[in-house]
Length: 282
Image (cartoon, rainbow, N blue to C red; front, top):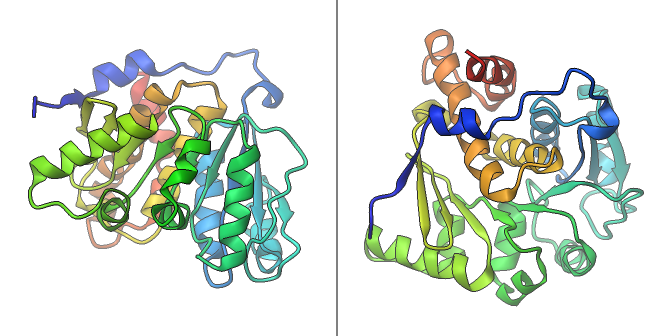
């Protein structure tokens, strides 16, 4: 395999579009996060807050009823729409046409949720990020990937990747299989790990930001929010995928001096997004 392209600060600065001083929330992008089930509403909170803190003008979060008060209290800036089911998602109905959608964090694999995901994929036309349980459901129904928009971003951790592409016997085989998967389904695969690699057809990009502090619960949920936000703001998926992983890693590099590796949590990613954006303008 040829050497991967490095995702460096220099490249990200070229991709980054500073906010227009005359903008307003209505043209900064409206993103939808579909996430959460009973006991995992935190995933919806983390994805939604990171989405908003990455520059999106408006965020609407779709959750089961049990998450309503949690979302409204923990993130008053986010609008909330609830499923008719109390504990898990069964029927995704959105009162808007979003600029981008992130789906999967904490949704579980209930049969009703699987049906809801299929119906959503069948009608959705918005740029899309698929994560977590959405990937686990799709790994058992790979033909559903034929329904997703071209350049949909998938964000599997190593076990989720294995469910999608099958087992591998070497790093080389893992990359070959992921490249083939990306080409077959016309999707972008963000292979979360140390380091994170982004596979876009036969192009492989290695992220240069981040450290071991990111190996913490909820880290992937925040990445989903960041990527969805960038898509909603109009970044093309090929740029949003690289920019998102770099920004995500950069927050850990910035925070490390104060938190150390052990005390860094996913909320610290969100807390340091502002400093990450500011560092791109230096």
